[in-house]
Length: 256
Ligand code: NI
Image 1 (spheres, protein in one colour):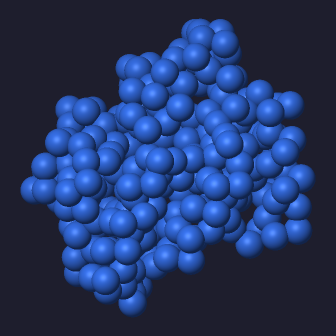
Image 2 (cartoon, rainbow, N blue to C red; image 1 turned 180 degrees about the vertical axis):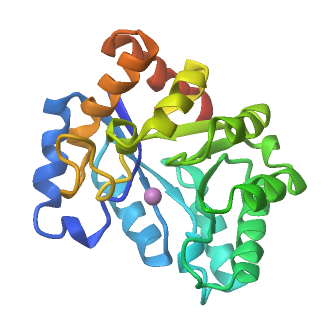
């Protein structure tokens, strides 16, 4: 069974055929999906998906690019919702310096607040970090992120940076980029990482693997990612599927 540990099926990209796509996943070997809430609206839709489909779990948090109008009362709402049986982590949260907005100080404020939230409720965290490697690791250390652990989703930094996150006990979300011809850096990272720290993910609707690069992504494409990890690691696809599923269960205690 393959687990997609990070997808956004709440996204409007699935408005036309969400039900159809989701009901086809099991035929493609996808047995679990963790839908990642990234905005307040996205979190509400994530909760609905977890209620509607047995195999969908959720994480709740506010993405750095969506933190502009965030208020403390929203954090309190997240805190209440995170006690739900199928909400397995806080996220996605983090820093994104690719864009100039929102202001970096504001991003840091809400990243810090949501890391504290994860610790208050003792759930792991799902971290989004783009062009912000140093600030991310510094803040994770400052707020003792290792106390609850988590995953660096869609890991995009170097092998050298990976060591910092490994030392903190974190997992690494690996998706479509590992299949790209220009994905050499990530292939090296996968080669370097211990197999027991890798999680399979899509980030659907984004980052479709080869041969579907550029098209809308969904979990049915995950076998391409599994195959590439298997090739790099010299393992069978069955071994990669089994180890990554076990990893997800170790990290996400509420996952069944
Ligand atoms: Ni995402």
